[in-house]
Length: 273
Ligand SMILES: NC(=O)C1=CN([C@@H]2O[C@H](COP(=O)(O)OP(=O)(O)OC[C@H]3O[C@@H](n4cnc5c(N)ncnc54)[C@H](O)[C@@H]3O)[C@@H](O)[C@H]2O)C=CC1
Ligand SMILES: O=C(O)[C@@H]1CCC=N1
Image (tube, rainbow, N blue to C red; front, side, top):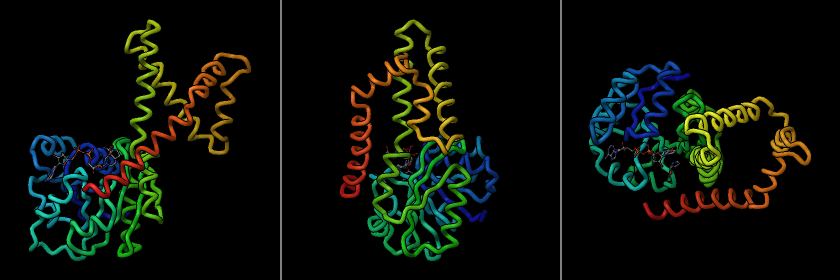
């Protein structure tokens, strides 16, 4: 794996997830710098992970060969506009993890045509279990692609997409979806508590069931998801009663609508910011 000098502009939740995964995978910490407007998140990153930190975006950009733009989409324009124009950006690889912002818009904000990769990661990157979609513009070299595959591959699985619009599908399926699973589990935990279990036992019941189910999915790629479900579902039994209730409530339609809402919001953000 290539090790370039790597900067993160914005040191929030997603930067922390990626940097923690990178450091624990052995990426040299002295090659990573994160910048943030306020100090406390930087201090925590420096203490926990030993990377370089700065409150100056310009210092981070000047240091790095590869730059991950990691601020909120609505902040991106102001952040890019404030970069010190005297810093030579030629030869630097840009990456953006911002939801919704297309390459063309990012190029406008950066004020130039640079090699640019859009990355759509998710927070399980923190544990090395991330899922990232990647899209490269025409200026990205094979070596740049290898580098980005290495960086995001160090914190999870990667999928290159050839059409930029597919990044919005990745947002719906993987970037945002940890939140759907947390919401589903929360609903299950609350129902366990309504049945009389305490909070801790309720959480253990549902989280361990989820972990086991996820592992069964991952370890049985030859089995369709419907087959794994069938293995749990005795005819006329309890699972059938529960699953039929979910189907009758149109779980598939509910999920489809939620994923379409994520895509629609990403489309909207492209015009808003
Ligand atoms: N949280 C998630 O699960 C995912 C987030 N993303 C994308 O990642 C990006 C960051 O999201 P989060 O980390 O969740 O947000 P966050 O709010 O936790 O982090 C953003 C950070 O940028 C800092 N910041 C604001 N203005 C700044 C400036 N002028 N200079 C330097 N730093 C500045 C903030 O202080 C904050 O620490 C967003 O664009 C989001 O779309 C993408 C995939 C997943
Ligand atoms: O909610 C958001 O907009 C970001 C992108 C995917 C996950 N979090």
